Length: 635
Image (cartoon, rainbow, N blue to C red):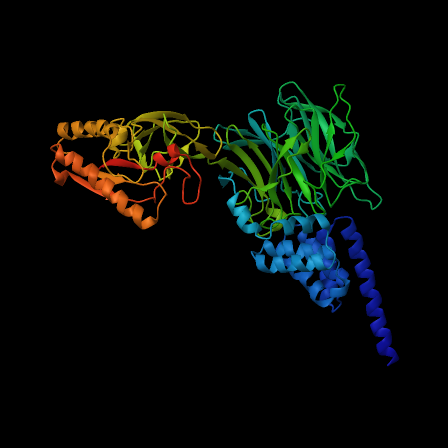
């Protein structure tokens, strides 16, 4: 028995030593080395929440989400009380990358119950049907992998005049140092030629003093191409800087171009620190503000978006956090600001498709509009999507993603993004004089060559919509016509942004309804005395106009509608209106009109012209308006 106790004790001490060694590697972000030790510990039969969680992290932070989900779920299932809330969240995120959205949502509910972070929970609860929302607001992009990608990692594009600069890890020579995080060679900045369609070629290292034996990545250039801000490991003048855990952090640097291509005068920015990372620069449209990602004190999560003002004398203001509208308790990174002051960034702290997703919000005096939108598919996938840049006027951009790889962050590639600019044309056809809708109007869409692309019929309310999606920055013609109206055309210059535009068309129309003879002949109403149905002298004058029209146009067939006011009971008024209708018909017959060309009907008090209904006190003049006859042309 004593021998067994000694044996078990020695194994326990051995495992403890190995775990301590793995933890040291983990704390230095040497995830691959730490992973190997943790896996051996588990293979030897040792299990704990800490080991499972850290194993999950070594995969999660290298974007290997399938394995990350496995280890996080083992911690949740086997060590529920010892599993912190953040691992529920990371497990939920990892499951999304496997397409398991229902399981992910269940873990998000569990994450909230165990005390998950407020901003993440708020964002999730505000849009429980996030997949539908993302699909609805998805941007119309075409995404294509560029030809310059290598077998290693290519990411973080930036515009540099008419070229593209990006980070790439070249193959390491034998014995050459590699990055401990993912065992890849260190990154350098490269430049590629870019044609009008965004095709890339002629890749060469960025010339000058920027590239070193450590990491350089994610840059931003001023519009004149003379200044660059870029990310580098804490490495200045040949010396490495480390934090208290001996970890080399990321910092931002500035370089100036000498001559045509040589980058020199490397300057570390003053808001860097050995104790936290500052990375991924972006410039405001006026180049007076520098945005970046950092985990500096005051951050809400693992990394937040911040900015500093660039003063006229070249100094920098204090770093300002963009706040909870943009930042969460997870990762926000890779900001980019477009010519229209749209802030694009990546996050895994929101309800996305999985991994890092790309989002956009409008900047307003440094702050944001408050609305953050997921770009949706195909810009986003269920893997990591980040480093998005775009020339909005040219509708051309790039992004970084590991969507086509099976090695997580080891297979980042650059993709060309072409925005499909498509316009939907809608509108309404109205009467130019009256403003009334013109239902049944024929509306035709024509291109600049006067070729008809589509013809539709206006609805009852005069509205129309073409199903044909037209191109941006293009001229079209909208032609409308209707019976009784002169046709009209509207020239349309489509905008350069996808969306829906409204093109109303007004028609010169006959103001009379096509079957209202009284309107067409400008007749005054034919009125009757109270409780009478005889034709009054003033009514005979108006009837003479009808008589003249019917004699001139033998094809006219007329229907007579007669009405009463509301006084008297309903049945009596029905009979009275019928007598008025027949009296009107008989007047025309007596004056030579064939009875076969006439029909007549009484409508009682059911079609009043005003509010003088039963029980309502009205003047005699108001009641008189309801004792009338109308004349309608029959087809």
